[in-house]
Image (cartoon, rainbow, N blue to C red; front, side, top):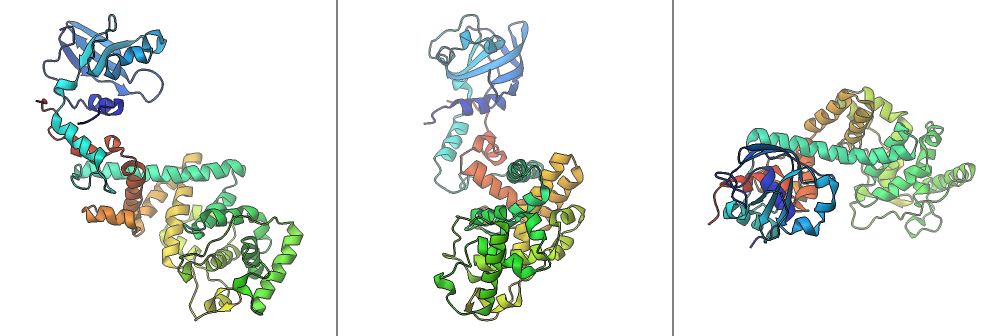
Length: 433
């Protein structure tokens, strides 16, 4: 049995998912809903701007909803001036409480049991995708609009990270890009640690050493705590390691650098993703290009971005994963997968934020276009949807699906989801027995 909530009741009223033929108030007056109003997410009645006809009189104002009539008194609406323009009190069940002079409509006898049953299945589902067993996509146009909204929501959420960084660094876009770029290179395991390293090394400081790539490398590895004397991983007599340590000691003293306390992790990581390699790649990229974000702003194609991000660390790393520990030869350039990751998680969100801040629609459109041109992400989330027959053709699709899973499915926000709405609306006006 479904336990009615005010959010479900709001959904039923907002989309008029009940039999509205021959409506009468609890006092017996004929009722016609001319407009259900607009859902109000702020303080005050649930819906504003509604219009109803009761008897021969048309009323305009607000609608208030409760699971039972006594909710009006429990919430002390009679004493609240925000509720003086309520024209209709809509409840799931009339429990006998009265509100003087306010028309009352009970919905329970008019809502389809089929709708309630489907909602109960969604709420009780233990699957990763609540509607997985009964999924029913909306029409092609509505599904496209929903994906567009999801992708925009995800970009906005990512842009929110950029916005918080901008506030911290007095709207320095290059610094913000540097922090976000470092986060991308940190992957999931070292996101926060790499950000800490980036914050400890301003772009203005790094720019002074662009012509000395090894010094940039020493700064990043040193601030990451990966050049520490006596570290068990690096106890060889390797000359390159000694050079990095010597450079870092000098630069640390020169700039009075404070150590980063975040611990960098290697556990359960493929060698190609070791933080030593990622920091060396990041150092090569920073040493190779000045004003990275300024360059991104004027670029028009993904191909240009790929060329910008082509960077390889010193040849030394072709035979090392750790400084001082020899390994089998392998090229260590920034791979296609990493470039795609940077585009999806750093460049596109920051372009989107820049476009919003400066009201430049060209930047917003460019971010969306690039996501549509990039290959889709493949992970456990996208695979779940693909198994249900949902297409994942590009990064725009995968970003939308990730947003859908993390922000809607995981929180059972089925009432706010176009897919959930498609499941619930079928036969929704059938009168319950």
